[in-house]
Every structure is written in structure tokens, then in C-alpha cells.
Amino acid sequence: MTRTVKNVIALLIGVCCLSGVSGASERMRPMFSPVVVNMKLINAPRVKAGAANSGSHGRLNLVNKRWCVIEIDYTPRYDYEKNSGKRSKDNGYWLEDVVCGIQVVVKDSLGSSSYQPMGAALFSTKTEFWSIALDGKIHRQYMYIAPQLIERGMPARRGDGRGVKVAVPSDFVICVTFFHKKWGVLGQGFYGLKSRTQGAEFRKLLKTVPSNSTFHGSILSRANSPWNVNDIDSYDLEKPAFIPAPLNDAAIEKAAIEAQEAEKAAVEAANKRSSKKSKRTRK
Image (cartoon, rainbow, N blue to C red; front, side):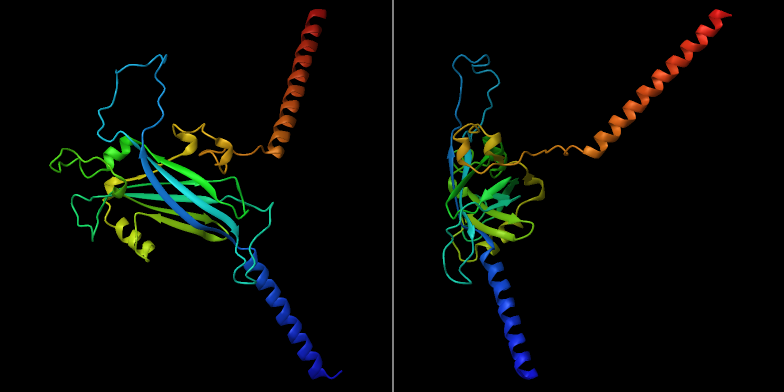
């Protein structure tokens, strides 16, 4: 076999190997699309009968009495489309440490035109999950904004001829982003925007929110809401806001050895004192 033929074969093998690696990486890329975002304003479940604090004392005088409930549907899967067009049928694949970031802008619809809305307040938070199955099925997550914060975020409680402003769904613009430290943005969805350039439109709206009306961490996850015990096994498991550091086995072993040495030293010291006392007694 000539050297030229050998070089051609080696080149073809290299190209095939590179193609295989590239195709595998494309097939293995996780995606969380589509991300569909909806919201509604509803009253929280209340328990009054027989409660020790039932009654009217301490009740807040709120105009906006309903919670903002944000419903997020997403489909975690592998992206096969670029390589072979086949759909994911795999089960048992999981992705750890997915972060869901959410931003909600309350529009100042009283002080701006419908063509150029202004932001009155920004509510935001992020939720990290333990592990999410890439099963190609629809998953659902809920996030909540309390009525007290909605009351604070509405356009300065100005009168519109009928009294103070009461929140309606069209006052809210929402952006939900799923992110992973290795894979980057996995999926993104919007509510309240109809243009094809929703991302650019939302970023433009963010710039109009006053700095003193930005509240990070104000959106509650399901675990911290009045709905926290409802059908909890049907949702991806959230990480708590604070996770204690893991046990350090080396530090524990070192502390145990030091404790043993200290105890041994204390026993030896006590024996020496007892021995000296015995000698003085004999004299």
C-alpha cells in the first residue's frame, strides 16, 4: 500500500471520528423546550374555623387581595434534531443542578401607552432543583407573588376614576429562563409579550423599572407558598435556600484523636497529682 493511500485512509478515519464525537455531543445536549408560561390571580386557601387567631384582628387593608400564580410548563429532553431527526425515547437520564430564573415586571399601564409600556416594579427569584428527568414529558412548576407585594408594585395606587388600581393579568410581563452551569440556557419562555423579539422587548422593559422598585427573592416557590402541601410528589424537587456543608470525615477523625489525647493527658495528670499526694501522706 502506497504512502498516499495510507494518508487518505487515515484522513477518512479522522473525519469519521470527529463526526461521531460531534454527533454524540449534539444528541446529548439537554433542552427544556418549549417553555410555556401562564399566570392567574386567585385567592389563597384559608383556614379559619377553630383557629386560635380566627377573627378580624390584624387584618391588612389591601385593595389587591389575590395572589399572582405563575404556571410554567417545560419539556426536559435531549436534542436529537441536528443529527438524525429521531425523537428521544430514553428514560433514566437525569440532569442535576438546573436553575429556574424568573422575572416579573408589573407594567405602569396608567402612565404609559400600550405601544410603549413602562415598568413600575420588578419581582425576581431563582430556584435550583436537585435533579430533573430528561424524559421528553411535560413538567410543571408554580411560582407565587403575595398580594402585599402586588399592592406595593402597582403604579403608586393612583386613582383612575374608580379608585386605586386593582391588578389584572394584563399588568404582568414574565420571563422564565432555565439555566445550567455546563450547558447554558436550556429554554426560555415569556408571558404578556406577543412580538417575535420577546427577549429584546423584555430587556427594554426591564430598563424602565425604577431601581427602588426592584425586589429580588420576592417570588415564592411552591414550597414556601400557601399551596405547599398540594400534590407535592408531582413536581421536580427544589433545593432549600440554605444547604448545610457536608460532614468533613477528616476533620471529625482529627477532632476524635485530639479528644482522646486530651482525655489521656487529663488522666495522666490526675494520676501524677494522686501519686504526689500519696507520697506526702507517707512522710
